[in-house]
Length: 283
Figure 1 (tube, rainbow, N blue to C red):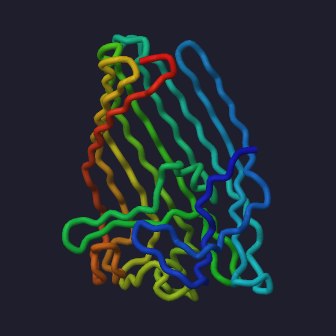
Figure 2 (cartoon, helix red, strand yellow; figure 1 turned 45 degrees about the vertical axis):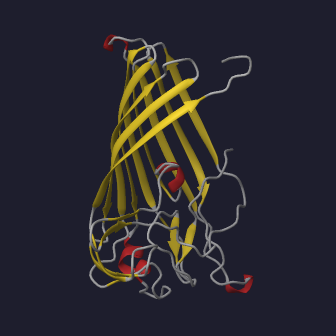
Figure 3 (cartoon, helix red, strand yellow; figure 1 turned 120 degrees about the horizontal axis):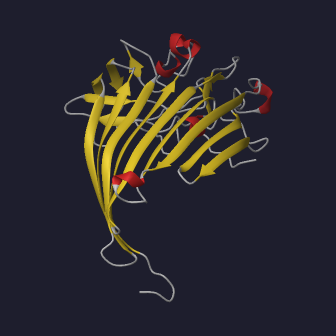
């Protein structure tokens, strides 16, 4: 049995709204009835290792309304599977050089199959441009059943040691969240099909909640003295949204309410980190 990371199954019949980049907030996810359970397999050799895992996750919804008399959808069990490997690359010049890759896929278990670092996308561009998406385990409306969300995640990276205390890595990651035709055709995310009005936004041209996030970058770490690490990470993040079109959005921070163009967006970011580890009895 494992801990229970979760995004929750969201009741679109409940009142409430969420901003761009924020979780859909109505507290409608079912309570934990049992912990997630899964299986891990690891095959390790001198050249590296290959691992695989599978997990089952309770993706059930809560009550249709605010009391127990309103009923609730049938229980739904989500799942996710993952496979990954790390291969040592001593022929690059250092025995610590390595290459890694993994892929995960699942339904109704998004924190496993899309990755713990996946987020509700929200990225504003210049002018009135924005890309966004909502990250859930599933969705339902009053009287209906939980429609499980499909998600997947791919990661790969390579790391090379130039010196014993200087290394650089290159990495690429991409994750996707996809909803079934019941959710898309009913327009639940746009306040249509019996869902709460203005649930996420009013979109007059397109109501497809699928989205993906991808990132490519490089990180260099230097340790000039023991227990001191200086790292520079430069990366590009892209958000691909299927909501493409125009949308009437509520105010979000400094962004005013109004008509926005929803399209793919991206940005370049950088992080400089200086870390000193304090070790008992050491320097």
